[in-house]
Length: 505
Image (tube, rainbow, N blue to C red; front, side, top):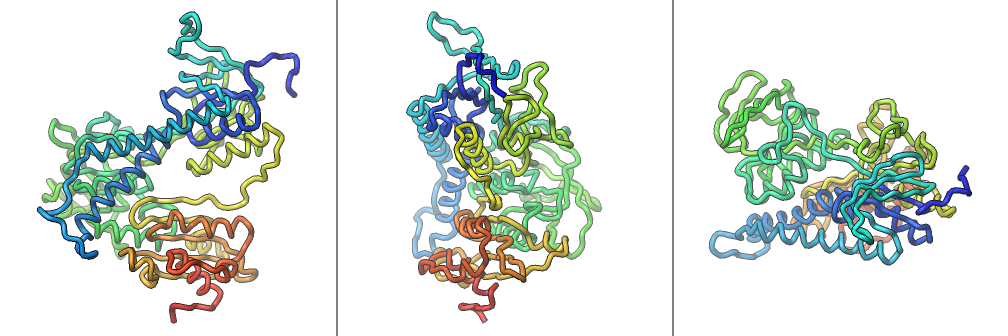
């Protein structure tokens, strides 16, 4: 219970201005709560907007445009003189930065309009209800001493940082993380990407399109571990056609750095009949392996991008004696259904509280918490949270997977339709991929969806909406979709699922 005798400087203090933090602050401001947001960076938006989701998508768009000009222009009857398009990496990076600047500036304007106090500095929870901010911002009288803020509700939204490998420590030059990979000043001749999750595949795609020889090394037996195996195989096949070497069931055992190169040793588990590529004859620099033995390859590479996931940024905002209860594995802060931690008045959202560590999950949690603070109704999200990989083709999925249903012994029905049979996809030279819908055989309830193909990140929303409302594949099948559109692929998959296929036998 709040102590009404205490005078607080704010109603809500948010530490961290990523998608979760800034969404929470904006919605609290909209509802008239006196809100402060504390951010260590000079700009708002967190990792996602400054050095993650947004700049990577800007470079994905630019690199795809460059790639298609050089590889697909002729198909469209467009001829490029003098051997094709020429890359201006500096201009491409400037475009990326201008998009980030526009969006971060927009958030700052919104904060001002909603009377949210923005404080740049390191915010630390010194005691329940009390935040100390180490800031260089001078206040009246030139005072730069730490700011002392108080509020009955303090929210941790400090996000996550790239996870590293102990035997491959980041140096920002040869062994880089995702942030470094978005700011390279020249295209590396060769790039080894450790980890075939969304970040690894997206960044690998960017630099492969721009001319780097890219090899992706994944410890698990498929790319995007945990997603639909069929979709992963299709995506891997297309990426290989684009020139990316993908090696699964493999790990980098060691790396020797010199002034000119990195020599890495890669151990591959023996697998037969899996379609796993081998490194022999396919090193990232185009030469023969320096050394080869059973299950072990040694190659030279210019840079290594470690993209093995992210880890919650748990401790930077916690002062001495402030130690909220963690989950059993110690990786996240434990919260209840109202995002409350074990410390009175301290809340946490986003990457700090568990998987999936995604911006759209953090934002939804922020809006739910803001409604709770304001006493407004905000039913908890009842639908699945999509996973998306922004390669080309894209991969998006939500809900149950076919592999998961098989493993659990749960009965299901499946509807499937290929991009290659869709008019709009063919017009766009985007025939790779499919839509797969899964439903329960009794009531037809939609259980899951996976889409690999052009525009999958947008197409998945329809299936998510139906699942959130407890709907069925028939709801999609009987909905009128525009023609010709990619969304018709989802309708065709739904028609197939309910036994009424249209454009297939």
